[in-house]
Image 1 (cartoon, rainbow, N blue to C red):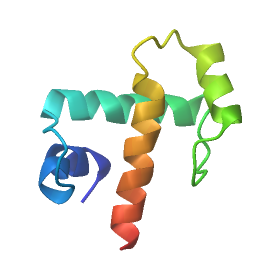
Image 2: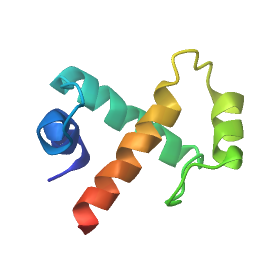
Image 3: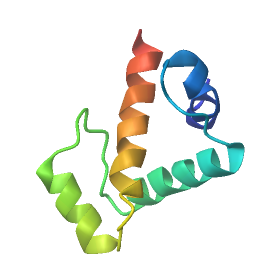
Image 4: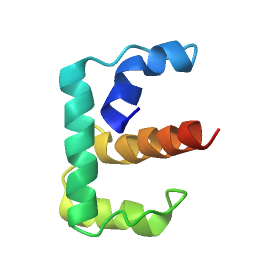
Length: 82
């Protein structure tokens, strides 16, 4: 299962969460890839103040999509490990 597939089926895996449509899942994946390409996210296991500062320097993110993308990705990595 890749990240996009995880997001689409997340509401079935993690009870109490809302469904994410495929279009939105692809947008989250695109944000993640962009953060990796810009060296904002480099495989850290948790979101720290340094990452949040990098996000704020690169993006105008009033909706918090970029930190949420990392939260979902870390959740996906934990799911894969279990």
